[in-house]
Amino acid sequence: MRIIFMGTPGFAVPVLQALVEAGHQVVASYSQPPRPGGRRGRQLVPSPVQQMAEGLGIPVLTPVSLRPADEQARFAGFDADVAVVAAYGLILPQAILDAPRLGCLNVHGSLLPRWRGAAPIQRAILAGDLMTGVGIMQMEAGLDTGPVRLEGSTPIGSKTTGELTDELAAMGAALMVKVLADPDRYPPHAQPVEGITYAAKIDKAETRLDFARPAVDLERQVRAFHPAPGAWFEHQGERIKILAADIVEGSGVPGEVLDDRLTIACGNDALRPLTVQRAGRGVSSADDLLRGFVIPAGTQL
Image 1 (cartoon, rainbow, N blue to C red):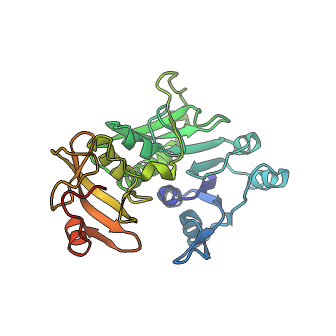
Image 2: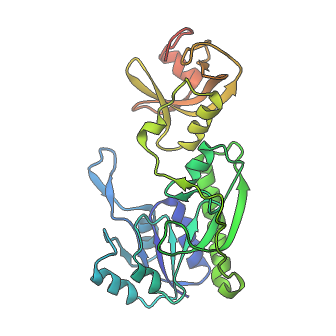
Image 3: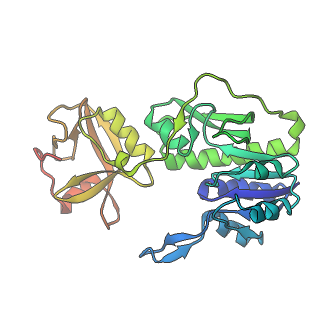
């Protein structure tokens, strides 16, 4: 098929790669414009999808909006059979949705209608969901409201957002290739009308650990915000991220360090950090942190 690919972050890269390996003709790749990055944030860095597409010799377009008539005309001019969308980041106007012969198919990282919206993987972990998955959705004007052609599922267990993102991206890529190989075999089915939830974009304030909450909630925060932006607490005015942690028995004033292993009392049970990172420093074990940055038992975080 003639395909327009639309995606931005690493989650979308395996999907693009799978389309090319399956023998489809990706005639154009749309992505968010390069953003400031680099070591000092002064260099414009192209998205992972743009880098992949350019490496494959696929023309890349990075419009800030698809609403202008000339952008819509350019999109339609590719005469695509289908547009494949994976975490693109822009709203698609109706003229864009209607332009390809088979419309636009989205790889969405949840079991719809649960967790429609921007951060489905993080929200599933934060909510303590047992299962999540990925679906191939026929896009329409509503926010992730379109009918689903095919989906797969996986247990969440103790997985982090990074681990689930990689797993769901690979699963979504395989499912998309399957649907495109025989679209008539996988007709769209309307989403259930019950069980709708919305995965709002993660706010930076949510990444701060509130030790008054149960340890089970904080451990989910740690996994949901790993590898980025990271769940954190402060000590002596310095921000310390917790990248991995266990829930252990323990009690005390919430935020109190209970022992020489940095076990922290929570509203219920305690949190024991395993992997941490000081601001501006590399990742280390909690034991290594304590050798150079003393946080004695009895400290109130």
